[in-house]
Amino acid sequence: MFSMASNTPDRSNPIPPGPPDEGQGSVVEERQLQRVEPPRAYQVVMLNDDYTPMEFVVMVLQQHFHHDIDAATQIMLKIHHEGRAVCGVYTRDVAATKVELVLAAARRAGHPLQCILEVA
Picture 1 (cartoon, rainbow, N blue to C red):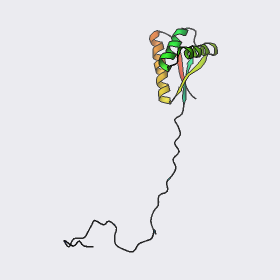
Picture 2: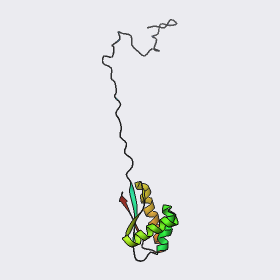
Picture 3: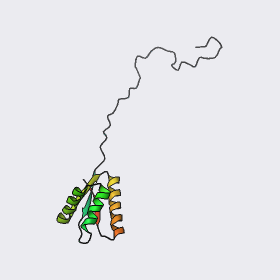
Picture 4: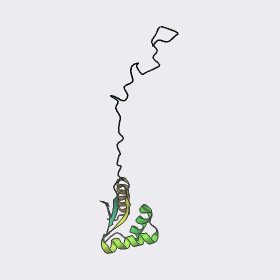
């Protein structure tokens, strides 16, 4: 095809001239369903020891896990009586950060409080 103004080929039409192929040789991409799984949950578990004061454990539960005084006291008593208790359930990065914050607070205060991360 040539434009009327000049003898140069018309490049505005990207489809080459020829008979229609009626879908022959065309590629159709099928949409694949993607399954996205929610992130795995991890629980932060505080362990009992004979030296960390109960008041400190309650304070840590309030500051780092945002429990109210009653919930923090109940969790502290569970730690004391059963040897361990779940403080919260989070994604891996958040749970690991909480463990590090608790351990750092315990070390600053001179307490041997232990806090670990487990798959929920």
